[in-house]
Length: 215
Image 1: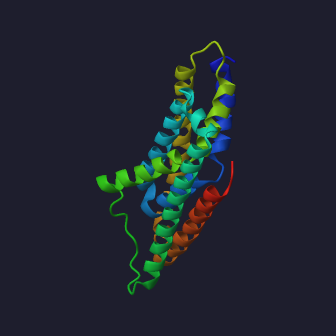
Image 2 (image 1 turned 30 degrees about the vertical axis):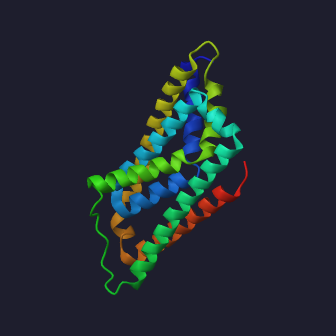
Image 3 (image 1 turned 90 degrees about the horizontal axis):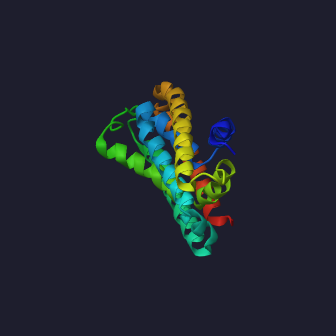
């Protein structure tokens, strides 16, 4: 398959996959709602950095080893699930602590642009993506459909992955911009508590499913 002629089909597949609900979407929505557009940027970049690493690992054959190894797959699945559980518990703790607070002060955007907060959000996104073994299985099944046998696997996969990352960054940042515009409403104390509770429940459910489900 010629790589240029396959790009429209590849782009459509990426858009459909990116729009599906999952840990990435939950993280981006919560971050954009509570920290605004600028606060969601490092989360998006962290998720896409993790995705690109998996693409490179897939082209090098390492992702295939991970997907084929029962132990490696199990370890990654448990680590990823536990991290999602941690994020869910943290969201629920935030909801509970704000409920017990005597002064329901509206949450500002403080810290959204600080270096520590930026790298923490970036790291959360990267870990969520890298600790998901299903991404490895997805990469080794998805990319070969768009790489012809006469082209170098690593270089072509790296190029397609960069294209996917670019598409997803545009989509996710567009979503973050839309949600961020309503940030003042989301950061009202009562709304923030509900958002923390809902997002925490979603992350907990995703974490339990990742830990419990088989391949």
